[in-house]
Image 1 (cartoon, rainbow, N blue to C red):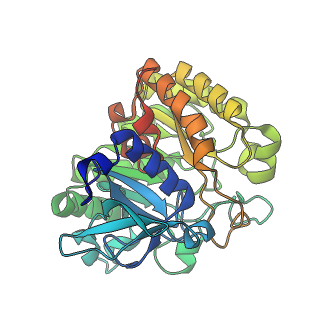
Image 2 (cartoon, helix red, strand yellow):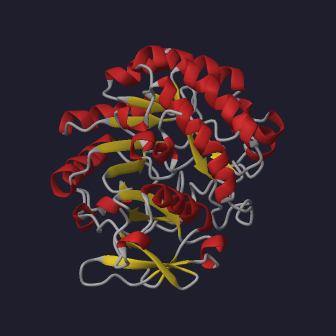
Amino acid sequence: MIELDLPVAARPAPADARALMTELQTLGLRLQDPGAGAASRRGGAGPSDHKAVTVDGVTVMVPVHTGSAFSSPFVADAPGPDGRSLLRRDSIPIASVSFPRQPRFYGLSTTDGLPYSQIATLHGADVLATTVLQTCIRYESRRKACRFCAIGQSLAAGRTIARKTPAQLAEVAKAAVELDGVRHMVMTTGTPPTPDRGAQILCESAAAVRAAVDLPLQAQCEPPDTDAWFQRLKDAGVDTLGMHLEVVGEPLRRQLLPGKSEVPMSRYWEAFEAAVAVFGRGQVSTYLLAGLGDDADTLLATSRRLLDLGVYPFVVPFVPISGTPLEDHPAPSAAFMRSVLEPLGALVAQAGLRSSDIKAGCGRCAACSTLSRYETAA
């Protein structure tokens, strides 16, 4: 139950908590104390311009640096002595929320003098995440860059480094487990100018981390040139694999992913099938970004095909990132997200591929989408 000093009859039920989380992820949140809890993310690879917020015991990533967030009806008061904040909608108190604390490993530096926070960061409540290679052949070309990507922003701002070495990643991962109880790790990468599309550096990084600490790992990259890389990744210590479609319609792919769309959808489908054969059903996943133009029917039809293959379809609301060509593109409405997530949650449950069964990674963390809250059989 959402904790709030209201009469019991007035407190939101669990279903209302799910609806509240979905609205927060689409409308964003204004903060009276932006420094509360762990630092928010700005720019960089993957979902960004978010802050981790715990609602009804569930940690979700909520936009706080976007245009919609600045005008959001939701406001979180400064935390009280107990660390909790009163959440208001249009000035009306509706819930009590909290923020995961700043991790202790952020206060340390590597043996070569780099702050740990430049090597890997905390996502959600207990996930360590890193972009092993903070450069990308797509991003380096204005013509080929994904229109929503900000992988170079954090590098330009000095918040990270271009290439994290296996030794650095192992050192930080060990400290994050020992000091902050991190439970799994995500390693993504920009796409290098090699046919493996990043699989090789992910193998090297995973092997080093697993030699240092027993930490479940997810690797994320574009489909490599040969399926042999999937077994190599698994042998290196990778538990789960993410290969992200993001958008599905072919005209939309060419428009929004001009470089990445050069890898055809047919290669993704082949790679998904081959990867599931190595990692197992439910241990391969893909991001689908809702709100960029694919309608609900397209997202659901694609998700059904993915589920039939044993791939977890992680449908996430699009969040516009400042400084990208799509910074003014609106986020999807909560109603649109529910129209996708409610039927998709039932499909996921029927397929037996729930988020909680994923060994590591974004789907297990589940903080960037409320899909996991809908995963009940119809």
